Length: 214
Image (tube, rainbow, N blue to C red; front, side, top):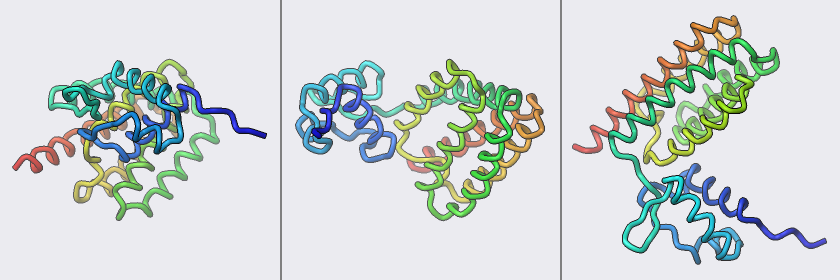
């Protein structure tokens, strides 16, 4: 039986996933024909997907070319301001609504992710899974949608804060504190723990960007 042809949504998701995974990084040029060949998709849905990504500010114009967008200092600060509040709210709601099974998964994630300390890229992927689990445990679909948008924009940052020396160990301790608060149904503590976690990550990223500019 013949496989159905990829749709516009498939093309969009393929490109978005490639940006999110770091296959395409900020500043990389995206060529319609090359994308079509890479993903085995016709050029029309690729073109439409690129237009959609440009509209969402995930791609930018460089002359006649489209490149993966990057965030300047002010944009990054604005993104973290929104992320801090939304992530904190997700943790607060998770403390209120998470099932016992979701709490168990979060605890398991913290323990399993400790084995990834030496691999910042793998730890970054695990970190996204951890935060996504908290989003889902909030049981608020509208909040999850907004956080998905925020995390897409996070892919426009060239480096992960988890690459900083010692950040992995600190992040795992912060994750543990967040899960402990959620498990105890302490909404205020969960909110504060996750906000503090994002704040420390932002400070770490600012230091990384500052050192790269030297």
